Structure formats: structure tokens, C-alpha cells
Length: 266
Ligand SMILES: Nc1ncnc2c1ncn2[C@@H]1O[C@H](COP(=O)(O)OP(=O)(O)OP(=O)(O)O)[C@@H](O)[C@H]1O
Image 1 (cartoon, rainbow, N blue to C red):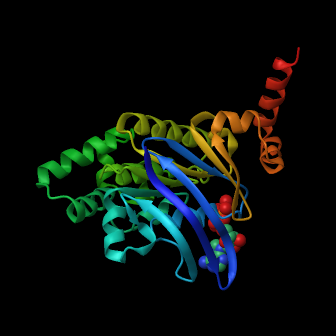
Image 2 (image 1 turned 180 degrees about the vertical axis):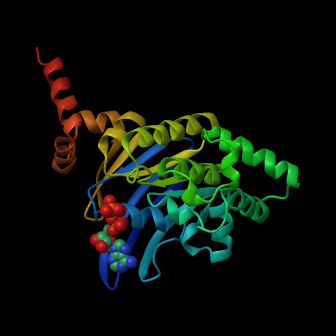
């Protein structure tokens, strides 16, 4: 069942096109990845879904969610959906936090804005959100600068999941993390996706993550989707030369594909 449908989305900046007539859909509960090299238009597409694109960019087309076109919603209606149904986590997780507020205060602000709960309920919910991402209670009293990058990214995931979104948009969430922290964040997202049934739109240029976690992928080049489909099929049998190039440029995947082709050669 489709959760979000992008139909003929075009994005342009000062007259020059960035994204051309893009169409794809995200199914309920799936991990959908958009891959492509730097500058291919992944982030502007992800931001257009929540009307977060820079104001100098013009968007055209349709992004259907709950039978409404998100592109034509007022900013206050969009804010409500962005708070409750669609959440973002970003590569620059520092941007999700104000440096002079504790993590607990950030949680509380989101809860007060969107939920009507008693102080006890808020605290219980914050603790269970922290527990879900593997952080301890004392994080609530700390300032963002007192957490490591990996801890802060996990706190931003806890914050995004407080409101139980149907769609979590994760724009290169591990790029700024070391490999162990990246692994933990990805495993965490995968577990939360399965336990809570929320769909994930995952933006990345790292095909290794896609191979492991994505159900379906769309490969973007110069603002267009050049190939899309089941992640394993696309990665094993790419049909577009650009997808092939991305695979070959990803050392472990290139090797993985070569090994697979050796295995099937009689
Ligand atoms: N506010 C803006 N005004 C004009 N052009 C922009 C603006 N934001 C992005 N662009 C251009 O749009 C293109 C796509 O950018 P985008 O950030 O979506 O790429 P990306 O695929 O996410 O790359 P990366 O993997 O490096 O994040 C780039 O050429 C970029 O310079």
C-alpha cells in the first residue's frame, strides 16, 4: 500500500532545472533508498517532501500523502504533518538541536507542541525513547555539546520518533559518523522500522548501506531517476550504465558483484 507518491516533481533554482519530472512511491513500512553521486538532487527532493527546500527553489508537480498534495499545503498545515506524520533526521545532526538547551528540554518542547500529556507521561515517554536508541537517562540533563556525534545522532532519532511518524526521512544520517557509530545508527533505524512499521526514505551515496537495509531503491543522476526497483535485483543486475558505475565505484560492492557473477558462471 502506497504511503507517499511523488508525481512529476520538478525543482528549479533561478531558472536552472535541478530535478526533472521525478516520479516514485514509498510503500507503508518499507525502506526506500535514493542513491546517486553528490549533486544529483537527492537532498532537494527529500526536503521538498516536507516543504523544507530553500526558498529560492521552485517546485512543481505533486507529492501525495493521505490524499493531499503536500506541495500545495499551507506552511502551518505542513508543520503539523512534519511534526506528527513525517519526521526528518539529517547528516548535520547538530542542526536538530539548539546548543544552549538540554536534550531533555528539546524532548519536552516537541511533546508540548504536539501532544497533550502530563509531566509524568512526558518524562516516561522521553525515557522510553532514549532507551529505544540505547541512551541513558542522564542524557536528558546534558547539552548537545556534551554528547558524542553518534550519541547526538541517536538522540535526534529518538526526538524524531517521539511522535511515531509514518515516514522517517533520513538524509545521509551517518556521513558525519565513524564506522562503528554509523553501524549502530543504521541497525537502530532498521530495528525501529521493523518494530514500529514506519517507512524510511534513506538518502545516501553509500551503496553498501543500501545493499544491507533497503527494500527498494531509485538511482538518481543529474536530477533524474535512471533506474529503480527491488534493491537486490538492481544491485545484482543493474540495467543502467550509471548504476553499474556506482557499483564498481563502491569497492566492496564491486567485489560482491564480481563474486556473484563468478558463482553463477558454469
Ligand atoms: N538553494 C539552492 N539554490 C540553487 N541551487 C541549489 C540549491 N540547493 C541545491 N542546489 C543545487 O542542486 C543540485 C542538487 O543538490 P542536492 O543537495 O540535492 O544534491 P545531493 O544529490 O543531495 O548531493 P550530496 O550527496 O552532496 O548531498 C546541486 O547542483 C546543487 O548545487
